[in-house]
Length: 114
Ligand code: DGP
Image (cartoon, rainbow, N blue to C red):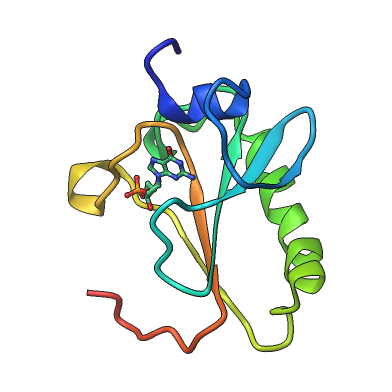
């Protein structure tokens, strides 16, 4: 997707603070952090949102979630806890149309989020 900012980040065309990457997924720090640790976890392949997940493209979701415990341990918030968020569509507050999960940690997070 030529006009997708997260595809450009995944391709290395736009710089980002990368925490982890492999063939299928990329983890980088959010430009506008809402917590002391605020990571974005994305599939490198373009999937617009959770609304476009299918049996054909959903393997990467397991890969993303399987990576989370290692990230939490490496960054030191595994014991204190964290929150994983996906915003889907306009009412969900999604502003970038490339599927991503927010991983927030480093402070006590309120619920409900508002
Ligand atoms: P959402 O509202 O769920 O679509 O979240 C999009 C997030 O992406 C938002 O927290 C800000 C972040 N973001 C937008 N553009 C960039 C960028 O160019 N670099 C980085 N690191 N984060 C970005």
